[in-house]
Length: 168
Image: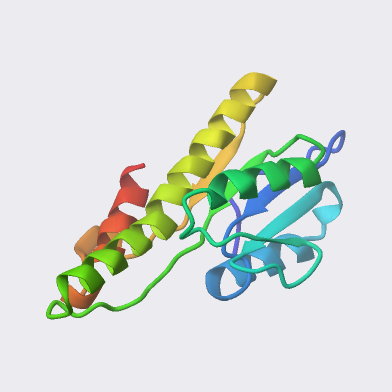
C-alpha cells in the first residue's frame, strides 16, 4: 500500500487516529503505517469497539456519544495534536427485507450510526481542531464499491452509508 502524501515532518510527530484498526483493512493500514521505515515520526492511535491493547481506544460507535469520547481520548493520548483522521470503522450486517419493521429499522440506524454518522462527527471534530490550531490536516474515508453501485437488498443500509462516505 502506497500512501500519496508524506506523513512525518522531521521536526514534529505526526499523530494519526485510525478507526476500526483491529481487523481487516484497518489492521492492514495500521500494520503498514507502523512498519514504514520513516515511521519514527508517526504515532498511530488505533480504535476498536473494545480496547485490546494499550495503543487502542475502545469505543462502540453504535453509541451516539462514542465518537466524542473517542476524539477526546485520542486528543489526550496525542498531547492535543491530531494530524490525520482515517475513518475506517464499519459494520456489514445483513438484514432481510422481510424482517420485522422494528428489526429492519434498528439495523438500518445502527449501520448508519457506525458507518456514517460517527465518521461525520469525527471529521467535524478534526476540521475544527485543525482550524483552531491554524494547521492543515488530512481525512481519509474508507468506503466500498457498494457506495458506488449499491449492494444486495439485505445490505441497502451499508451501501447507503458508504455512498454517504463518498459524498462526504
